[in-house]
Length: 362
Image 1 (cartoon, helix red, strand yellow):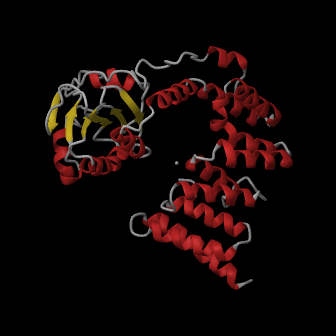
Image 2 (cartoon, one colour):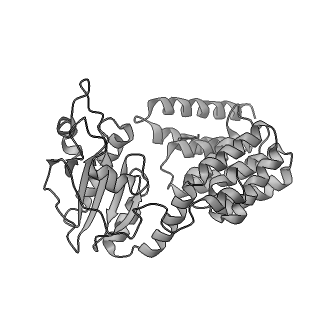
Image 3 (tube, helix red, strand yellow):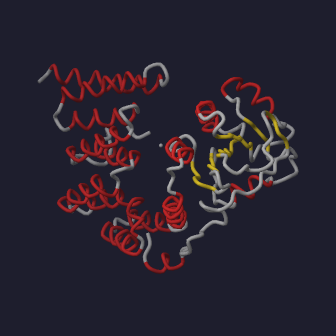
């Protein structure tokens, strides 16, 4: 299950400096300037020798509500070693939606016990200093977003707290975080973000006109100049090769994607596999062995804990003719979805029944 172009001129015009954003990893953390401390002990400065997590959220943000309990768990896990500060930003304050951060925090109860502040409380204001000096300066336009500040008061990590904060935080606390390497990778990722919109636009235009060869060439030219783009557009290239009736090239490139380009990206591997096996999808007779390999790696990366990815593997195995193993995997997928995700559980259970019925007819 699936859970959530351009050539030289564009690449030359894209930001090439190591600082595509005003605030980057390795920079001193900006000051904390909030309108109100809603809960917990105010943080007026970053004390040397102490690690901080500054997380941005809003009362209207659905993903933020999912991230808060996890952050709260981390705050308890690192009590005394890491100070967590949740800062509400971009609140939609008007007559119909009055300022409600304190009410929201109170309602969260023991799921949100760390320090909480509000960026602004006046509806006449646009962005408060936290949204401006942290989020906007770091080119972050979505929430939840978290910043880890290390013992030297420098930004050590920026990302979505729902995915990926645990490892970096553990390493920062343990003194094992390679900030120089992380900063280099982050600078590349942010630079690529400036290229992606136009590249996607050019690929889409070529695909709509059925110019598959042109779309492939656009991707290959871009990747030749900026290798980091392959991780973003490799899957696209794979399916374009199929559209262009270059099945042998697609098969070989698919192996490269799984073994090298996407080897550590569970989400991308799952997308590749699911698109190959998706019921009613565009791929009528896909490379199911490749889908199995991609899904197996995704499941491995997620430690067999994600129902949707497990479902992808189950379906890939089924289409590859491995019915008995498909049933075994699908039963695990259903178990993972049980209780928490009712609609997903029903869908996965229906697929499990399909597998079992197929086995009876063998």
